[in-house]
Image (cartoon, rainbow, N blue to C red; front, side, top):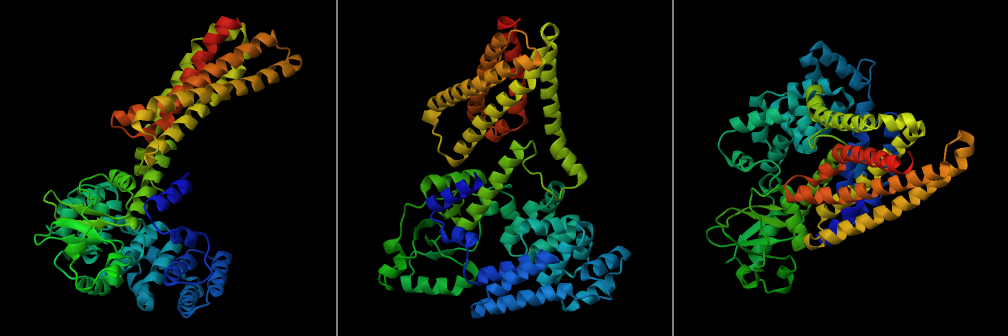
Length: 530
């Protein structure tokens, strides 16, 4: 599902398909892949590292590729070199455990930043954090400058608030925002409270997971009075920092956003023309407090891959690029997956035990309540079970099939709502289609179950197998059909109430279907079989 949404996004938002192609196959090395190779090689050990090094050697077909491959293998060789007869990670782990900071820093004196981070990945997380704390400020900032923000936040989680603030102020503002937003909740709040006034504090004041926290200052914005020639020169000056340019924003004298130019506009018009002569005024912008999921929806509906962020006066604050939109999409998919798995949306693999308990226990307790209520529902029909014990064997069948049917319907509905392909005016028709699907599937499943009951009745000495088969089939049809309908309806209702529809794919819909399925089964069995 995630891959289908990603492919859809590349088509709708005009993200180059080469992004997908580069993830699937590549014949030669590029600067991008060389940087990734450094990380990939360092992430393995033993046979895995040898396999990675083999891949590096195979993509050394260009000058850039050979240089990067040489650098990658040199980094890996350093990590393989023994220190006092021990592998580096074991030597460093022991010294860190002993608290020998001077020896550790002396040994790391000639190591490159990326080599240090690769070493950290080989260490237990607790000791990697100690090593990070020991590093001089410049090297600590260098580590966070080259790693993924989430990995950086994991390393820096145990730092003091003052050191975290100093690190954040030493980073580029975009990287600092990402680092702080990925910190544990309590640490993050304390850092934000103590940040000195400035651009970083202003960005974070708009709230987490908003347009302000995902926007970047790496964009091109020029006055409308500039000539196209001057604009091209400005792009060339900032090309290394900005990277790919998809829009050039035009501003008035007060910094207000007027519109944008596309890169091709710079090629087809005379260099002496001004930006204002050819500016496109149909610009789609968002406010800094808009939730990132809504930003994604705006981009999708407008069919754009870059979105400017403006304040209430229309002044340009930043821009949201395809990279940021892709990250938001990945974050939202992960949150939905967590919820569907009965986890808190923010749950992560490196959370402390106390945080894991806080993120997971409420969902487990909710599941316990649902299971208990299902057990109570079974207990209400104790008399029926005493009259026909064979009915007990169908309880797990009905619960499982109704639960699966409901989750299928809710998952499809939630996915459709997140991608915008379920329209408000089509809700009733969609629910009816799901109901028809549930009825058809349950009829087929019920027939299979009936055949099984009749065929095995001689082996198990089942009383009145024909009536039992009809009862099981009818009960299964009703339970599965109702569960499918609920699975389609509940996400729509949750969205209308302002709640996250993904909740409908988790423990709540499963518990509701269990209770409903058991109750329906025994009511029908009482009427038709007993």
